[in-house]
Length: 73
Ligand SMILES: [Zn+2]
Image (cartoon, rainbow, N blue to C red; front, side):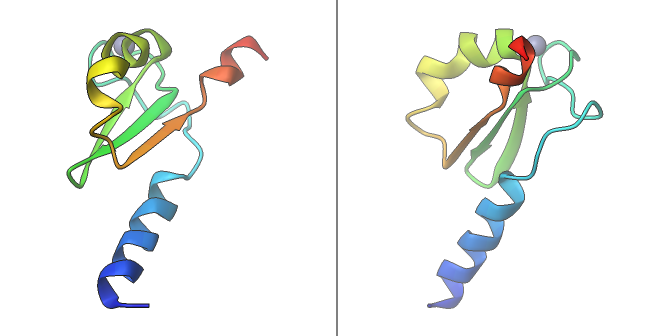
């Protein structure tokens, strides 16, 4: 495994940690249920804004970590 691959694995692992009540939507401040890793930056969205931006952002995102299913639980 190259260093670059290791860095990427670490990044993906961090991106995959569960979202908590402290994670807030970047657009509206509601509790975040989706984390998007995009060009090395982390974006957080509530289910509403994740859905709104999904068509545009998802094809570009390195990680699309979606916990919005927990809303219905
Ligand atoms: Zn929002």
